[in-house]
Amino acid sequence: MSILIYADSSNGKLTKNAFEAANYGAQLAQQTGSSATALVTGTVSGIEELGKYGISKVLHASDATLDSFDPQKITHVIAEAAKSIGADTIIFSHDYSGKSVAPRLAAKLDAGLVSGAIALPNTDGGFVVKKAVFSGKAFAFVEVNSATKIVSVLPNSIEKKIGEGSAAIEAFAVEIPTTNLKVKEVRKESTELSLTEADIVVSAGRGLKGPENWGMIEELAHELGAATACSRPVADIGWRPHHEHVGQTGFAIRPNLYIAIGISGAIQHLAGVNGSKVIVVINTDAEAPFFKAADYGIVGDAFEVVPKLIEAVKKLKAQQ
Amino acid sequence: MKILVCISKAPDTTAKIAFTDGNTKFDENGVQFIVNPYDEWYALVRGLELKEANGGTVTVLNVGGAENDPIIRKALAIGADDAVRIDAAATDALSVAKQISNYAKDKGFDLIFLGKETIDYNGSQVGGMVAELMNLPYVSLATKIDVSGDVATVERDIEGGVEVVEVTGALVLSAAKGMAEARIPNMRGIMAARTKPLAVEAGTDVTAVTSIKNFELPPAKSACKLVAADNVEELVSLLHNEAKAI
Ligand SMILES: Cc1cc2nc3c(=O)[nH]c(=O)nc-3n(C[C@H](O)[C@H](O)[C@H](O)COP(=O)(O)OP(=O)(O)OC[C@H]3O[C@@H](n4cnc5c(N)ncnc54)[C@H](O)[C@@H]3O)c2cc1C
Ligand SMILES: Nc1ncnc2c1ncn2[C@@H]1O[C@H](COP(=O)(O)O)[C@@H](O)[C@H]1O
Image 1 (cartoon, each protein chain N blue to C red):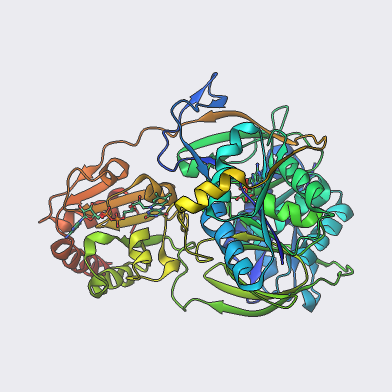
Image 2 (cartoon, rainbow over the protein chains, first blue to last red; image 1 turned 180 degrees about the vertical axis):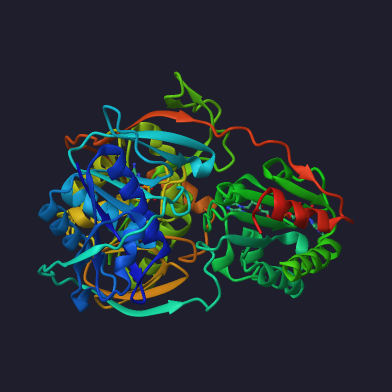
């Protein structure tokens, strides 16, 4: 078995998800007694860092035409790299890049793809991968029967094993096809923390009564180093931007800590946040369904509780 | 402009999730099925808007059995011109993608729209596979598309931001929130849907490469620890010392 990991980059640096995918591949290699090689595309620095995540060899296709993200080109490069090392297993992160490339590669190689894996494959006599289905309301164990297997790992879902070491980088020369797609512009929503990558998320719903009351939510998020999110109706009425909407029809997130303020906890909302490690709910209604999904809760008025919470967090930080 | 919208069937978002046959089958008992929300609200409606602005046709396509006809009629009621059902079992993403591309490859579609993912198996796979099989550009999780002549300008979600791409010629796109506002079918639409063409075509012979062995329900969450509203410091201390989350 030979494993290839596609390590994605942004602004010339490998992403957090790339390191995670690399580590997943390295752990799988250890489990099966095979080798794990990473592939990096475009102008990227700090590649040797992959060594700490268990990767000893990196193929670097540094052609600058790969700096902008064209899934058709990247797919071609990954397929060539897989051929050159005889890879039978290819690993991606199930993030925005992974979602646009992994399925293409699966079709190209006629390979089975399990997207959004949350554990290492079970390789005892087969190849079975666990993933969340029904928007986190259940799990499925998916068997891959094709010769080549592709797995994309759900961000923030595996325990990382970090060690020492530096990866050897090998230049990978490959001809790049032309396509009909041109990247015109990349806009980061803001310099703030991205919602899908944040460790802590502070989220609020219709219980906040109006957009003018979000000051305290932003302040709490700021104190915690958290990103902000909201329920769907709040985004729909325009109290908050659409890119904050989490749930079944918005973003699905899996932070370490999710604080839900004035959100009832409808099943469609929970579908996007039930992967969070710790959930805190603040709601005036003790019967709000969200409490059933919560680890910690306060039955109380957000307008009283949140200012106190901000003070308490400040105090904790001052002590540290 | 010739537009194809691929729609799938999904359990209603409030459906109770349970399994039968030793946890190997989804229990459809009492479950109401809907058009997968991303396919209906975003892909289909944006397709209709583009047709209304530029002329052309919108065809909806589903891979599945006759039990899917009601959701196909729903898409016709919202405004699609005609529908095709590939009469084959939707066994896995790659086999569905092969059915779709085998059907679409010689039909000259300018735009092929899908949803960002199905809300049951959450694959986010079929769109990219169709694009590769048809050798077309693919824009995943698109939130906006405008078309001018044969150039489409598309915005898609990326980590912490948005990417704007320009595609010349035909393309495949998966639609995420932001694309359009959901439409509710009116009485005229529902009446018209009854007589709109729904062609049933035999599928091609394809084999699945993945299969679900079994399902599992998440362990029940332990009871929520309640903290008094006048004791917020206790919550912060629990989050810091016990949960180690801050
Ligand atoms: C197909 C479909 C898809 C959907 N997708 C999503 C989705 O992706 N995301 C999503 O969020 N929703 C989604 N919804 C909507 C969902 O069903 C709920 O309607 C929505 O989540 C409710 O938002 P909310 O909790 O902010 O508002 P409400 O349900 O109105 O709840 C407000 C809560 O605030 C509490 N409250 C009031 N005042 C205070 C106060 N002073 N202090 C503290 N608490 C207070 C109330 O007790 C109540 O629990 C979807 C619905 C459908 C049908
Ligand atoms: N059986 C099907 N028939 C037609 N289109 C489908 C089918 N299954 C999935 N799709 C389309 O592919 C998209 C992504 O599905 P998936 O990759 O399964 O998450 C859906 O939103 C639909 O647009």
